[in-house]
Length: 135
Image (cartoon, rainbow, N blue to C red; front, side, top):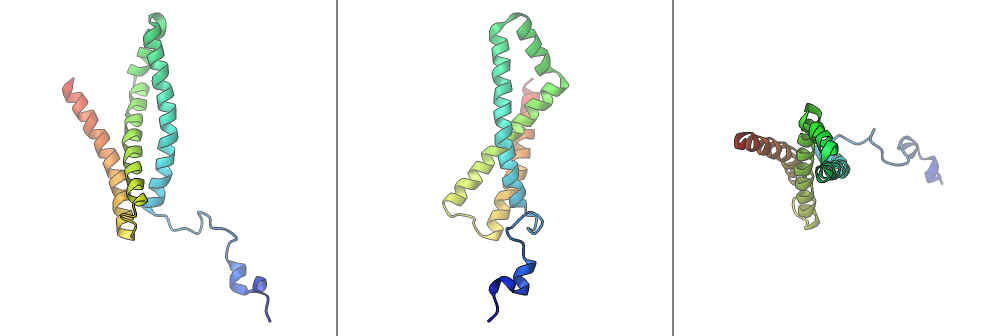
């Protein structure tokens, strides 16, 4: 009787699943992006708290935070935080659907992943267009 540990097919399999054997899916990328945007929002809120602290303190600190926030880098950070908010929001809605057992099939998962990807980008651009039109 052969030992199951010496089985030839078992020797070729990895001990645990890892990224080199998984097929890259959009749902996988959106899950990773959801986690990254969640962490990024912590940093963004800390930056916003520093900006508000500078505004509240007045004087040179207010001038410094205003100058940092109004430059290209500050605008880029605000734009990325805006995208992170929308992407994370839509990712949370995606998970809320899954918690209720909805869209769990392959096509449904792909639909929700695309909706969070394109929806986050689209809502960000739409908000910035509205902001630029409002002056």
